[in-house]
Length: 357
Ligand SMILES: Cc1cc2nc3c(=O)[nH]c(=O)nc-3n(C[C@H](O)[C@H](O)[C@H](O)COP(=O)(O)OP(=O)(O)OC[C@H]3O[C@@H](n4cnc5c(N)ncnc54)[C@H](O)[C@@H]3O)c2cc1C
Image 1 (tube, rainbow, N blue to C red):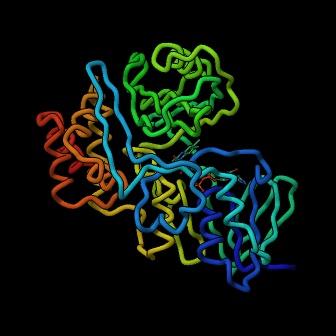
Image 2: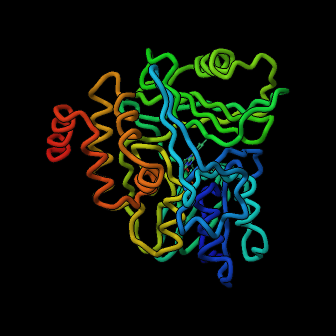
């Protein structure tokens, strides 16, 4: 019976990162199991270019030194020359993480069950095959809480005949229907003839796919004013805006979204698991950032017309301050500016309930 040193359950972004950054030079025997290992998934991972992300700069598909927020009465544009907003695509990431790794076997299977024997784990696959390993990194997607706040979206890459401006990313455009929850469009000009247009909602209830697609169609015609385009790719996501805490032991480690890497106020996770891997810190997020995020999410859950707080926050910060806040490296002055930009009464209510929860 072969017992692997390590098994990766799920070979998504966080497992690939762990293989590359922790085990690429090891002699250990490794197995990676993913139910969709050979899928054509190619979503974008966005982040601001912090110092720990610089070593992945050559993988970046596109970067923007300016990003904007639009609302009914105007817009705000941030600029940062030192910390641009960037995207890496999943297939690029996968290739980079797995090239020249020879000590790993792959299985494209669903993991049905994991049980512990004395000093190793038994992993049962959907064809009843058993795999044995001494240590497990588990990144299987955690179940979605029905009553938890979620960020859910569909994004489409459109190919246009008319070329468009490349230099600004639109992070949030609130000039769209707000009937189903906090809703905005996210728009990244990928190259002169391709734009990623994403309809994103913060709410408890998921919507039929056609709803997001309809919003995208309307936005393309009304705001982007494009009549001729072709949809060439699509991505879809449901990200938790609530805390995920799974217990780790020395030999059973939950990673990525399952391990709590998602920043619950924004849905960003990619840069956070890379920071943990490259700097050997214990947690994905600092205690204070987690606490501020919980207050923020409580506020979103219990108030209407919450787009105003994103506007007020982005108005009160410079591009460098905003990116530092989003990447979990804000200084005290920036954090205070964020707190002061929140509506006082509702914010205090959310603060008190965060102490009680
Ligand atoms: C479309 C999309 C866009 C995103 N964009 C950004 C972004 O711009 N910036 C950012 O920071 N974050 C982003 N995120 C959030 C986060 O970074 C990603 O979800 C990231 O992929 C999380 O990595 P992971 O390894 O935890 O999970 P995943 O990458 O989802 O990997 C989990 C893997 O486990 C496999 N799996 C699940 N269950 C089983 C099972 N039972 N047996 C075998 N295999 C299984 C799945 O097939 C999958 O490959 C995005 C998420 C999505 C879905």
